Image 1: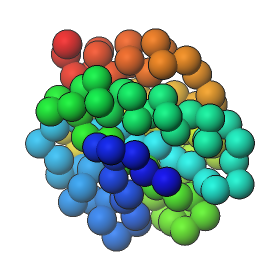
Image 2: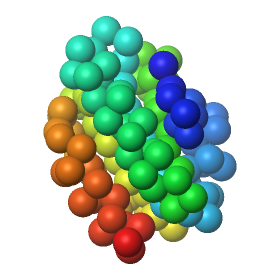
Image 3: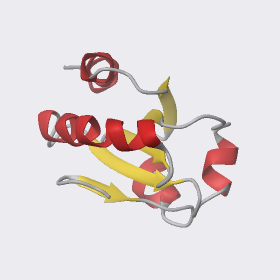
Image 4: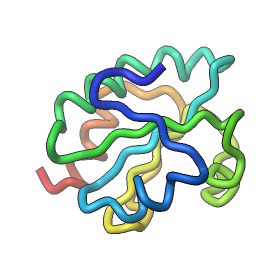
Length: 111
């Protein structure tokens, strides 16, 4: 399900891959049965390409991982969380246009 430049992350790798990352990280919380998640996937892939080298992009399947979504209060998907320096910097819930995601990422990445 993950596109080019987009990697899977799970509860056990979240700390190392996201919270300890030296660059900002966008995490896409999704599920296979979620229509809006599938519609958002190509947009997330485009954002990963646009910010290549400045942003890490990860996807987490909420059906296979429950601890991390619970920790960040994920109740609706798709949910995009942007982390910087191990802290939650921004959050987008629901299907949104690419422009909305790019603006949030730009603020966090500092582009």
